[in-house]
Length: 332
Image (cartoon, rainbow, N blue to C red; front, top):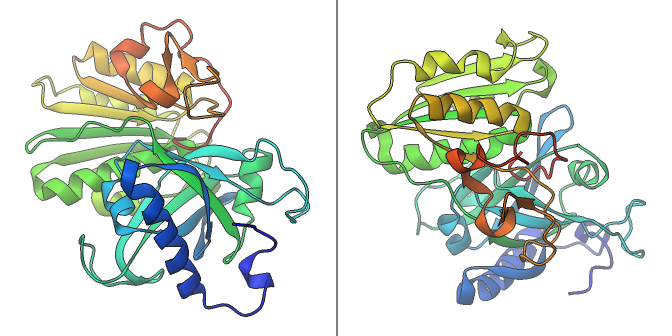
């Protein structure tokens, strides 16, 4: 497909028909391998502003992709526009990984819920929540409805599924809230009240807080921390974590975390010290997602192939885990 201009800059188009046609193309490519191997462009059907410098980009996808997506997996998202807003010049390093932050299944359109059940009449949408952390992510947060976004995937490992009677503890820092939301959403939708979900969300300040209302509607308890104390408890998520972990040693608790590695390291250590199984969604630079470039190594494993969801006990044994790394903004 040749992208010569955003759809809204062309002759008048029926955006629903355009989204349906692009979704059909996705389905034809996705079904044989359950994977989109080359970027396929989709028009943005909605741009939802979450907080300062944070936006959720919604694209229509086939039902099979929406319902078979596993929380923790990510897509490579390609911005076809160059820095001037056109498509006439090469735009290098414009494809980066992002996790799915939210899903709408069975909608009649982007704003109206028909039925959140697989197989019902309606359309299905993936929402990629992106924070302005630099050139590529910043340009994505400034796209508009009708602009193109190309995706390939999904790639990587997923969070383990919870069982009835278990307890899920979620700890996020910054944009790491998005895979934590999907993990909570999947557990609640599948198990209902047979799972207890408790979460801690950390932000730098109140202006950057996002997904709070989403998590409040799913979790049994939610605690907020901010570095400056402008919302919730002042400090880091680790300050509140001992309270959640202290009284649970029955082997029925699982901890998931996503955020900067300097935050995740003590979170995982606390979980391991409490004999709680734990997993982290890793944030590293993933240029290819094909296990070719080798730039996403942690220890002797590739995050694009063996992650991004990785066993916490194993990560704590790796010398190169726990330092600051550049955001890839997919799972964080």
